[in-house]
Length: 130
Image 1: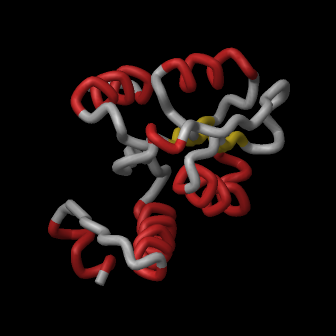
Image 2: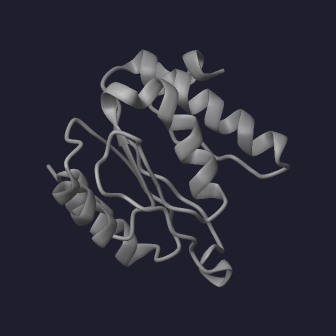
């Protein structure tokens, strides 16, 4: 089984233009720097996920880096426009309710912006997602 850092590195190799947002229990700068070294644009501290996940998604969609306000020492930077061509995310969730709530918001935001949204989900999640 891959940890999130290694998964992000492999995703980055397979799809260099992917956008990745991490959710983590750690709000110290060291893991955040490690995450950004993978090419991830977002870092959300799990206890702040309810208020921070949607702003993280919106920032990443605009090509900006995002970190929860509780992450010390972080400064947001713009990503050059030429680097924002395609978008793919890998997110990890604590339970199915959080997954479905966050994912439906993400899909709704994409559709409101006239973008396509593709969902690869397990059979048990298909009905809940609909």
